[in-house]
Image (cartoon, rainbow, N blue to C red):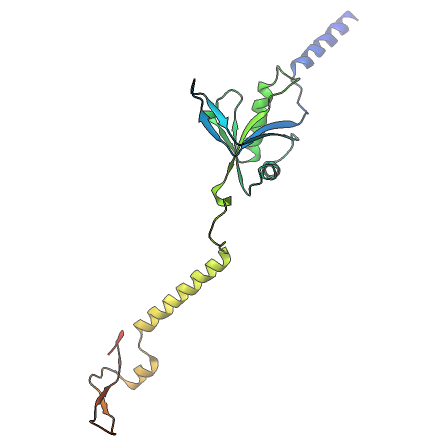
Length: 206
């Protein structure tokens, strides 16, 4: 019985050594609309102005789902997510762009919060507005319409080039139109005057 009790105690101890998988929601301390600037006394970086909000999400959230929540938070069309690792300063932010990046970030904060289960660390996040989503004074451009315009312009250039390179078919059938000084006289009142007709000659008119 004693041996059984000892073995059971040993198994309990081994279970205690195994880290328990956290189940509580992940909290992000999100700042946006401000700037990261050095502090005057010691030069340490700090976030100035803007807004800071706490966002709680489930641990199984995907990166795309998180992006939707962050866009709703700050009201921007496209958001770039930069996060501060628990052991680093603000001068070493990491970009989060995929599910794998998000999972690694949560794991880093879980490891840093092992000794403080009652109050786990919040992920320090900074939201940046992507340039593509900034409002523009120009009217929006339809990419499909722009592509169609490019095709039409290329087709027009090709036709013009072909027209300049090749003489007109009716002119070729009538023979070489290299006629210079072909004149007609208008008979009527006053002195007869010559009338020079323009004749297509190769790539230009004469």
